[in-house]
Image (tube, rainbow, N blue to C red):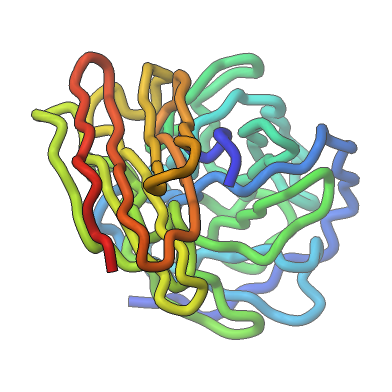
Length: 283
């Protein structure tokens, strides 16, 4: 993963006609931010996907009474488009740039509440859902785009099914770090040790029994969404220490090394709060 993603009752089905809008080319590709459901904390919506949707891999969020519901930024970013296509295509829509080639789009809005160039945090209200543009009923059209191509959506680490429907309950704006240690280190890793850094965050040591790798990440608990000093390190006894350190928005790491039966020293820091273990976990 890159540092980018550190900064991350159902109505009847409705269909979106071909939008006819072209995505502009973006910057170099990067790992996706941890996109969240674009509705308030605790709200349950149905994510609907279907063959022939334009663009492909778009998601329609459906819910009884969705008109007027607040629409939130799925990840921190900068507003790049606030447009109105009238009674066709997207209708009223917004685009956010999340860096690294990633952008999200929110369409068929009844209201737009941000302006081009504005910086928004994850969970910031950017508009309200509606039924503007070329639609047959109210819903929120949503896209996760990488370098101009709409990707299969992932929400808080859970893949949206293609094709079908799945209910998602939003954790957007619920507070706390939106990432977990296992999300940062990836599939197959489990937490085997952790150390609180006061109230500033937590350093985690994980292990993958299949690859025989250790992984360290430090998750922030303060200044979430704002770049601030954080680090994570892993040292296999007899080998050079590997460190990830800088100003990140949610976490440092993942730092991975194979140790086998050799002891490891691990730790991390958030601001002035730091932890360094002795050599341990030797077998």
